[in-house]
Image (cartoon, rainbow, N blue to C red; front, side, top):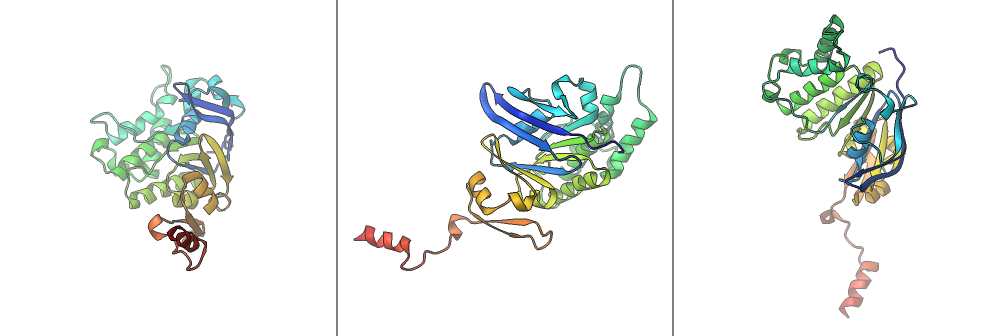
Length: 284
């Protein structure tokens, strides 16, 4: 892709479901051509933000802009050619083959006067090859393993040919090996052509390893964003997730490594310390 990386940003964005605020006054400039991971506790607004960035949820106030144009002003077909989203747990119709699924990624490029073309065919087979599922093209999607199925959906998003790809928890329900496989694939897509990728992740260590930019959310607001080494701190994890932890350096990637501290592994109180004194006083 030779086009410059697009500029995607939210300005003073407020989002709600059934009148209940979920995101309030949020500003976000997505780093173009890089991988951004959005992290935070359940119900903090991560997926809601992603839906707004894809124009699947209309803002209560504020706006999302793509290259300076409000998303609401961009024709649907044009937007689908420029921005793609892979929701959490997508479901394919029964009996749909991998090839049929990936072909659907070319729908935004079809019109009544422009039907299937060599360019469409090339995009589909390039996506199959890039995700290493060419040999699965004739298999039914519902017969695939979780990792293969996720690769097929990513191939469909690739075939769509967008410069921005939004992924909502792309590793959900996958075992550890398939999670790494999918995240490696996502990184390949970014490194190969500078595609801008925004993904919601639950695993902080995976976010640190694979993202160039991390956005931490709490209660519908961004509380920290930037390089993983600057964002992922013990104080931030305790504030956002209510979890005590130690943050050290991953010996493999050199990125931050979060080590949770459970209540069963809390340090023992120091004899004669303040905690012991309180116990002594209480017992007297």
